[in-house]
Amino acid sequence: GAVVSQHPSRVICKSGTSVKIECRSLDFQATTMFWYRQFPKQSLMLMATSNEGSKATYEQGVEKDKFLINHASLTLSTLTVTSAHPEDSSFYICSARSSLNQPQHFGDGTRLSIL
Amino acid sequence: AQSVSQHNHHVILSEAASLELGCNYSYGGTVNLFWYVQYPGQHLQLLLKYFSGDPLVKGIKGFEAEFIKSKFSFNLRKPSVQWSDTAEYFCAVETSGSARQLTFGSGTQLTVLP
Image (cartoon, rainbow over all chains, first blue to last red; front, side, top):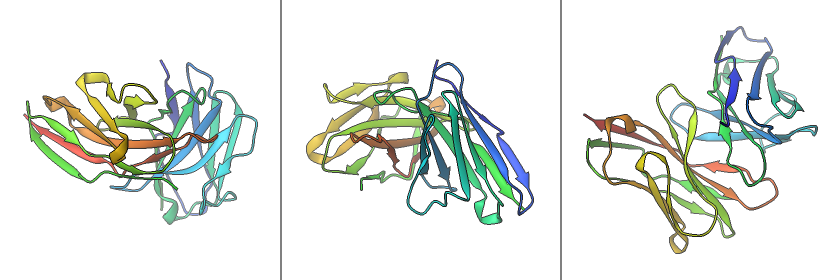
């Protein structure tokens, strides 16, 4: 149980393109979803927290106009990297939680490469 | 803000050796503590968690961790590692505020030699 699906697993695109990443909880309802970014050999850095039906809460230093997050249903959240540039290349990971007293369950991550 | 330190960046052990990975955090309030494992090419998986109660928690695959509040530590242990334990291990801390966000350590790469 508690499976989180993230799609796509890998994206390679040109600079200036917008890229959408989906995160789905397959067998539970996720009241909260989280988006992380992971640089090589480094830890996961939280980008934003999103609660279903509410605006996402972004961490300091994360541009909300650059990284658009939508959490329209209890099983789906999307992260759109708008006008992506090479410095946005990274590994993006989502997680989902059914309630406050439950642990987060993680997706497989999306490797984004901007040329 | 809370922070999490994992002092061992890369640990190399032979099969059957005992394992202890250090994790220390800085936060003055109540915390929930987690260890996650990431096998090569796979997503993060929960190994074990501590919310309250017995400070010695047992997780999957023979792992355990001990919460020592006075030392702000939550070290991960396994008495006898296997080759299949080769993975990256992340310690994470969740504060008890309304947001319940995780702060991760930098991770420890464990390599078990057959």
